[in-house]
Length: 315
Image (cartoon, rainbow, N blue to C red; front, side, top):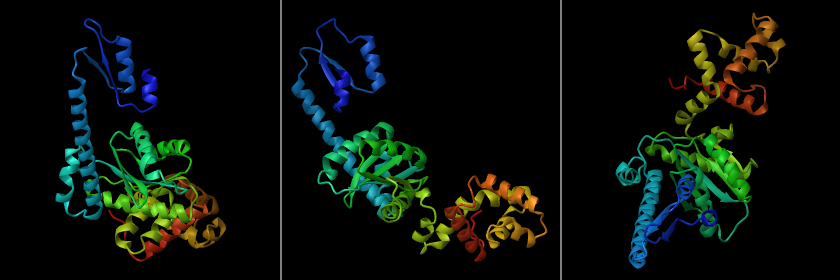
């Protein structure tokens, strides 16, 4: 019976028990395991008063949720004015310096009920893996705020959600480490959403997965975005050179200037081909990805062009 209640997403169970009767230890442990609220009451319990109180609690919770949604929207629209949202977050146990991600959940095919019943079903499913989360509607899409969940973990859970709801398309924004930066994750979630709609077919897409499109989308904000892009693409190699006094960045530049040809690079340098092969392999190992795929070559070349215009890498 408990399993059936859970399957229909019941909020809990109240049972009137006769005197000297109680729930079994097995049942209590099972409900605790399933995180299913189980209440015991007496035969004389005034249920009318209880239901009235439950209604008051539900209304309070609904008001609290609406206030939190308003705070999220203010944090997105007016990030510099903390008075408009910070207190509301704290009242709902969200602290300033947690990790936050905004995701956009949309439907591939227009559905009349997506905004109402469908969104509620999705929200309940999300709460299974995202205990601290808020869902609200924006431009016909469900906007999800999650706390202390990395995008990679979100992506795995969203892929399972997408299997349950095949017409969903989910765009995950960037991870930000402060309430005051939620607007960035929201902005990057919409970038991911637009790329997903127009250029990539993945049903679940992470902002870090869109690669070069990040640069194209942030072309009007080079000073704030370019250092981040360079750090993500070549940061490990730059840090390795600085720490170990190696010349891998110079080798990489020369390698790309010679169309990723070992022979041409050797002719343009004092290195033997075997030495260059060793260095190129070391560069791949340090960066942790294949530098010769089309997507990664474009990313690296863009970084090298940016670096030529000045030192934009944040220290």
